[in-house]
Image 1 (cartoon, rainbow, N blue to C red):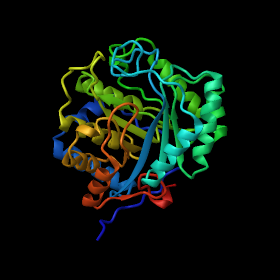
Image 2: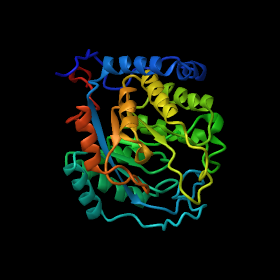
Image 3: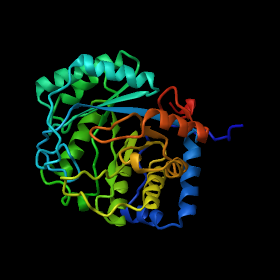
Image 4: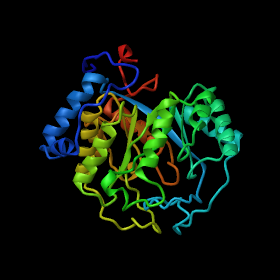
Length: 338
């Protein structure tokens, strides 16, 4: 018998944010673990069916050779990670990958390109991909770097549902991770996406060597966006040899669960997504993340350039937990909330 939950009417987009400061978020982090997870689960059940999850698949449509110097990224041209730069994938190959993801149960298909910012001819090609994937009945998402004026509108016209552009970390810690792009550059792109009427997918990475206070600063920054993102991917750093962050101390697993929980509390109507780093998480840790409010995950055999738990293993885990896939792709949001 399924546990009852309370549907709460929700607007199509997240409501205006609560006044969450970094100090407020830090206070949540410092709650006893069980109290924090219990509060996050209560928040989750107020807005979502706790036994439903949304599945997204991710394809790198253009890999490597990125001019940015993000310290975590194997696709940066600044680091020798053994990753060769590729050209943009042909349309037919992208559509074939989208069909395979759809057959495996994914509801959203995300396409990522290692660019600082797409050139006009690049965007024309990506817009064609978006239209073709959309025609399959999948939700569409892209991450292409910074967008110039008019580019978000072109993607919207092609049928794009979500644009992913992560803040990565807090404003205070950002300069230690990236020097080739400012925090304001990221915020400007997100504003262009909003103005074009595209839903925002925006989160960050933990385990970069940041302090708990700096993790709190990231969540506070996300929760203060007006409105906050519809999708919030929480990534646990995947260390890659050749990048500056290879060898950094790994984040405590319970601290990762705390991050999921505070994100759920601060952004109660967002889809909080387990993203990079799931390959190193055992089933019990992933179940704790679902308990803490995660209701979306990247699903498939690979992320952009790193491994991800295979579809069959994911399906077995969800079956063991009695969780089911959200056919509408909204992370279990009650029908009254759409």
